[in-house]
Image 1: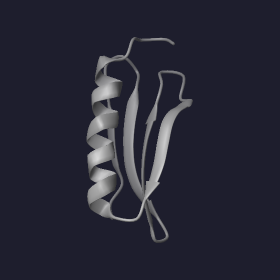
Image 2: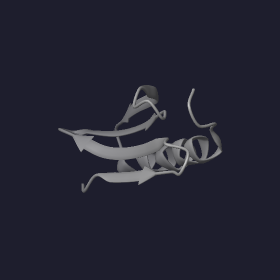
Image 3: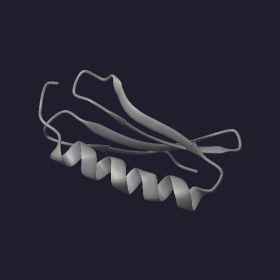
Image 4: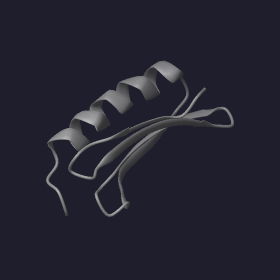
Length: 64
């Protein structure tokens, strides 16, 4: 799976990537610290979490 990274103007970032057999999704704040992350068994579940994390990142404030 090709990694997907979505950056937002407020500095937050949503990521989706694969590590071995795991599909991962995470969201990072403007400082680059992990706000939330999850490992999934299926690509579909990771895609759904990525969409939720992208919504969090889009609506988050700038510097935490």
